[in-house]
Image 1 (cartoon, rainbow, N blue to C red):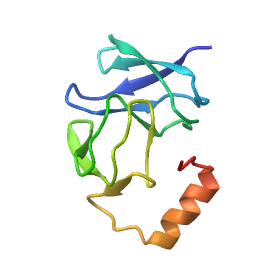
Image 2: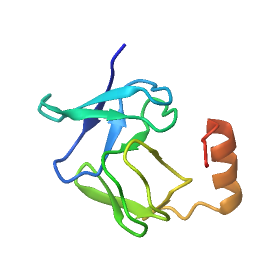
Image 3: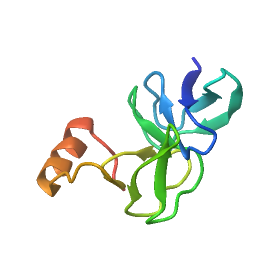
Length: 112
């Protein structure tokens, strides 16, 4: 089964998964015009509605979604990795570390 993701803006460095993806699964990315952007392989399981890096993102680089900066990478993020609290800090909400740890545990996010 092919998993799809959508890149909402041409300048985005992430795409949003339209269904769950398992580790090492191929994800077909489309844009907001339903045009194929490319195929990418996940480096870890990524649940529906979460973001995947479309290319390598350097530490401190902005995370762009829907044409807006939504946060900053706190470490280098390789293409295909889940982009979430374990590697990004939001530009809107300062989430306490203990809550981040709870999110990582609840979502069973691989951190290594």
